[in-house]
Length: 404
Image (spheres, rainbow, N blue to C red):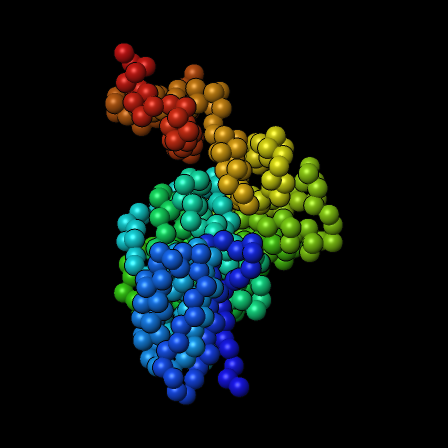
């Protein structure tokens, strides 16, 4: 009896996904079995989609079953690709229509919020761009079962190509090395902005990822910048945080994963965070010394918005630039918490005005209330004003309005 090779998910709770099963035969041509919620309306379209995929794979005799739960075309393509690759024992590529995203992400872009999207659940991809998080993390690591690692790669790749994520930075958390190096082949040529390296504990790991990215860029003739964000998740990584932060000029931030870090220490993670203060301070100082951003861990209680706000405010006060999110409802709270206060805005405005006046008068030295203002202070003030405008606490033309 011929073996059956499958990919995807099925069951009463599945949404926006499908399961594809393929049995290769010696004769009989192509037999397609459909079980779809939209079969009444899109039967011919689904059949043609499957036939085109099998034709690209040069399969002429097989039985293909599609259990469809409202999957978009790019999801069906990814699931067929994964099932065919299992059946043939080789890699074929079935790409969706690309949205041709032209957004350029800057190295110093705001990264107040980063929303995690489990890689094997396309229902979370569909509206992800509407939540307006600064970053979206397509996760290939912890949220994906070990036996599904390979079949999820085409799904994440297709989601990046076909989805509309507006102004969000597109990030992918790859698997731990060396498996993560293979993940890069599925994401680097297809629109990713930033690669997250999980459980990073050495500069060598960062360099391995950076070198692989450059090799793939040359291979695919890419000229866009692709950044790196190491995630520190154990004691070794904390101790080597500065080495990691300075390992590559493609690093844009250093972040910490407290669930794994506290597990590595053998302690419970608490609300007050006393057990992780040393590690978080190390991350902040290493990042600042390296000239990159520091990003805090996720807040795991998705119900307690007041505690989230308090935690995010404390995170900002420590020196972090943002946090991770595990639910869309956390995004606006984090943005509010990381927004500058009225006092910070007023101080920044005074510094900006003093700097502008000194520049207008051709002065090399800037002072405010008899105190010298050095370039880092001016830069920080400019960032506060930028964040105030971003959070609609100031208008773009605030200087003109105040001079009237």
